[in-house]
Figure 1: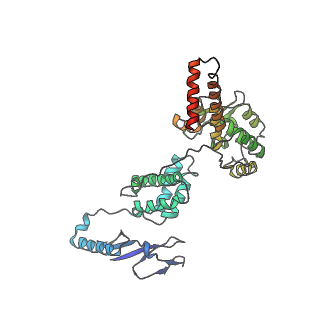
Figure 2: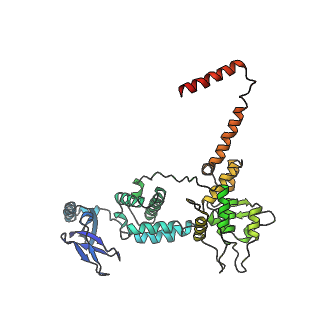
Figure 3: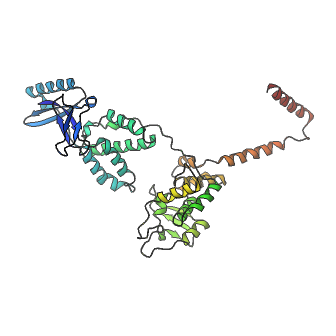
Length: 393
């Protein structure tokens, strides 16, 4: 029986139990690295035996408290009262990460490589080596505060949401018996409603700076509002050339979507040379479908001088220009594939030039009231108001 400080090697993640409270550094038994023991961030545990079986229990950062808990456990073991204590499940976060990806993400999330896998890998950087019962609300708050200095609140919320789902699955699979520590964490306030979209002049510049491979992809995005993943996943069989229709079967919300293709889209698609061994429209020389166009798109933006813009903002541009052209929001919602109008409202922004034109129209309309045909009494009233404004100014 004893009280020890638990230390992990920063390189190989091996766990070390340090019983000597005066040690300032130790050597890793696995990789040989010298591990500095942070006296300010110590985590004490107690170990004891019950019926020949070793039990370990995390206490906190106070050695005095750990010694008190150990003394209490000795009394409980001696009096036989410890047999009523429920055995705590010991399962490491590393092991849960593997099970979560294999049993949950790959089965339920079509884009698991771009979402769950990335989130879990980020979480592993901070929680690797911990048992699930050691990940407390405080540790999660500390992790969230640290990440908030590096990424947006929305990104932090996605990581915390993934962690919450992992703990729920751990309870369901019998890997964790406590309360989900993430349920006590309040999500951060987000501000994801980007208003950036391209004006007509910027669209012309972008087209001029796109190379031969990128241009048709950008044309399809700007004229259909399709997401990048939907565009890169297009197959020749998904396009009806005679009816000028594009059929999407693997959408974000899981519903089939029909998208009318205008003449610009059809011309762009017809100019693409089909790969003899690939069914995909946008594919590599090997015939495999493209996974991303990040480098190509960034180069085009740099050449055109367009800043603060992402590929997904092409979808925003598509919706915004539809609204400015007088298309009703419900039609825009159907074209974008939104289930609710709430999401569509994000794309209903009007450009400053368009707003100014609307105000100018109102000004022209008001000017028609200011005519010599006004009665003398109304003219006097207007003159009085004008004189009052000038004198007040």
